[in-house]
Length: 86
Image (cartoon, rainbow, N blue to C red; front, side, top):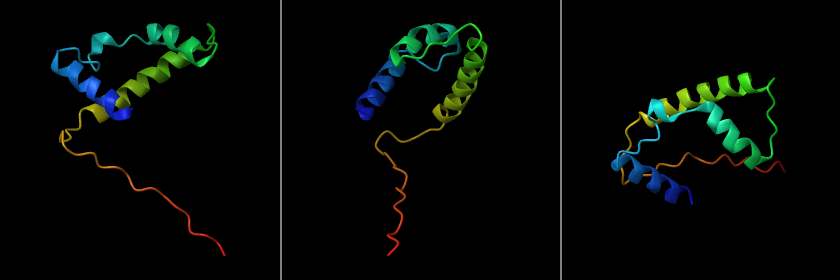
């Protein structure tokens, strides 16, 4: 599923629909769309904090998106497996 999503993102970029475009990010629209999906009520008091966090998250995502990766490689991080304590 993740690879399918990644592939769709790549197709969007190739067609000029770059999701990382600065003009495309609207935190208020994102809050309005996603809060009901996850069942999270976000009131007027919480909205400025959520908006700020989404801006920080977008900045982190932009940094990761700027890293060039080869199209034919998917390097997975190692998985931590604790040793059995016998």
